[in-house]
Length: 328
Image (cartoon, rainbow, N blue to C red; front, side, top):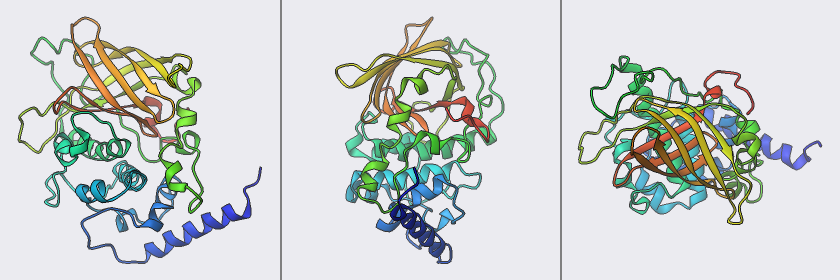
């Protein structure tokens, strides 16, 4: 069915807004809280790879302002754009030493008092993922291939830090995964944060046999260093999903996982309305379990793991790591 004229008019207005910002000077502010108009078009146009310069709206972020003075819809729109920028080859997110904020993913919980020790906010999930990606890309660019770890918890030498690519902004099939709301439409902001749920919670997406992989950051318990480090990549996870439960959740079971520690499986539940998930990573040959709390986002699974400052997790379909990725 053809889109109504009013929808085309709103897309045209979004394009006009983007072209106007292209000719404007960058903001002198050390914040990336999108103005109201930008919230209503910037996420969609970044998904569609509109050529407007994202550095005009993204430089540094003041997380206290974003999370104390903006509603959750504005937080998600701004943080989503930040993740999209982090995935670009020339990201505008500042380095870890940028003095405007404590940007380390490992120290993120100190900036979000309401987050406690678990990732219980979708907007925080997006924000944390942006800086996770920034730090991960820095680490992958400088790290030599890992040698075998000389400790009892790293017995699997088949996985190394540099043997899994990460997706780019142009390789995740957002237009397939998301029912994008029309810019400037009624309730556009309120729909944007969940517009991926319908497709990504469908069993045909979750259990299509595709491999999931990713990375997790190491704990920062008592560590005052601003640098974040990462363990070996995770590979080989394939999910099965249960029928919809009376609670509105699905049970997820991930098998075939392997990382630098050992073989592992994932078991947990995911909320079919919000994408919130609770999951355990269970090592097959060790009495080790780690609790994950997070969200299914258009970028994959973003979660915190462990307790009291454990670390962060990003798990995604490995097919997304190449341009022209399959729409699944």
